[in-house]
Amino acid sequence: MTTTVATNTTGIGTANTNIATNATAITTLNTGITTANTNIQANASNITTLDTTSTNNGTNITANAGNITSLSTTVGGHTTSINSHTSSINGIHGKYGVNIDSNGALTGFGLIGGGGTSIFKINADDFKIYNSTGDLNPFSVSGNRVQINGDLNVTSAAVIGGTATTLDANGRPTVLLLKKLRCCIG
Image 1 (cartoon, rainbow, N blue to C red):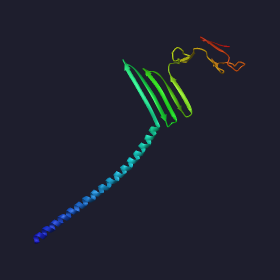
Image 2: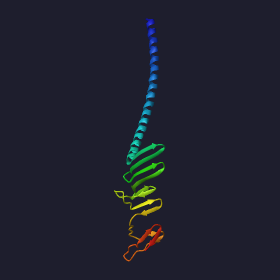
Image 3: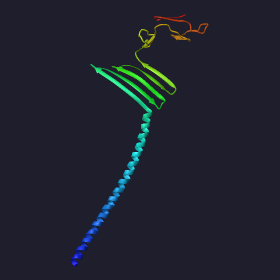
Image 4: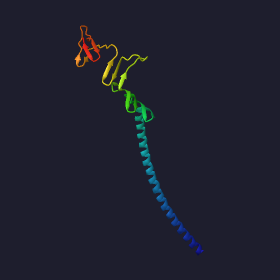
């Protein structure tokens, strides 16, 4: 019986050592879990902040909607690109435009509206307007020259070459005759 008691005492001592070791391991594990929970809460807070930022940016991106369409071809080293741009910003400002770059020769137009103003821009070396049959060209612009093909009806005073027209007795501008490079006011 003495041997049994001594064996049990040794066994209890070993069990107590194991329990103490396990208690230390559990405490260490609890500390690790507490640290992990703190990090998870911090990450959750960061994710919520990121989600809020993404939502706010998503709202801004939606409010600044736009569309760009591009088409490009290259043959034998010659490239032509056609781009169209459409945008609307917060229902206040809108743009629409098309431009063509054909080996560096640029042409296009833009419509811009917003802030109580509107703009129609044209970028071209030559600008001409034709009717639907293509046989009438009332005026054209080429470089710094404007050509009028037909009658010019001026309903107010005009300045031609630094000389102002005068109004007749009925308040109408006097007749302007433009022939070739000579100008006659009469």
